[in-house]
Length: 98
Image 1 (spheres, rainbow, N blue to C red):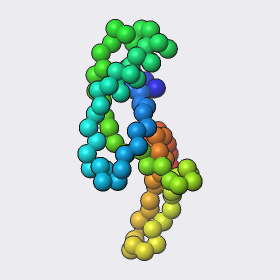
Image 2 (cartoon, rainbow, N blue to C red):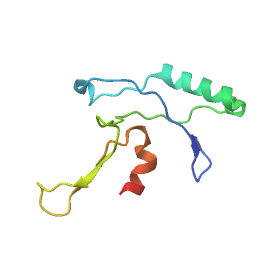
Image 3 (cartoon, one colour):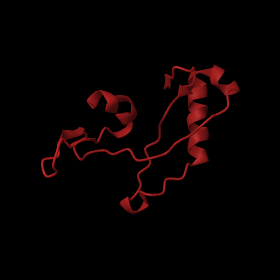
Image 4 (cartoon, one colour):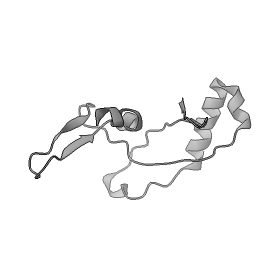
């Protein structure tokens, strides 16, 4: 969980394994959103009175050894780099890795 500059509280969770063939369609599962809010509310009861304002979904790319993949892509011309494999921490660590 973290609080944004405009006062919103955002949190994430759920690592649902999906096959590669499903990688273009990640519908939001309301059950998981409700479960996450119920858990967060047990930890922070004041959250009960606040509705869920937004949700998102997407890939959490884990590398086989769980380490991020960061480096220059030498097979492409110019200064092309890859930063991937940060799993569920990409939104927080990605900008710093860049």
